[in-house]
Length: 87
Image 1 (cartoon, rainbow, N blue to C red):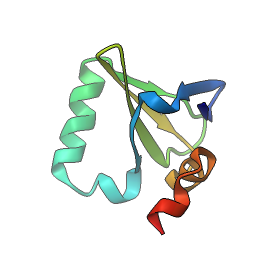
Image 2 (image 1 turned 90 degrees about the vertical axis):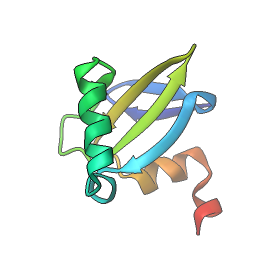
Image 3 (image 1 turned 120 degrees about the vertical axis):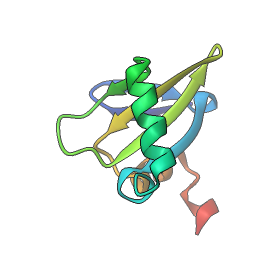
Image 4 (image 1 turned 135 degrees about the horizontal axis):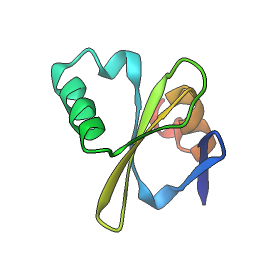
């Protein structure tokens, strides 16, 4: 199965490590450092044209990729069919 992230970008469910809300997670310095380091290493791909709301961490073939998306993390979790697990 695949998850649509925006701007014609889809990722396989089995490649997803985590889906995170930008507003809640970037309060922590460690998350900001993680994203800054990933951006510096060219592991970040922006798949939005509007205000970003979440980021998705994926790993495929041992390579990490972070997608910045305008979709809310709750929307992505619903699309993935796992939102009810976290209620």
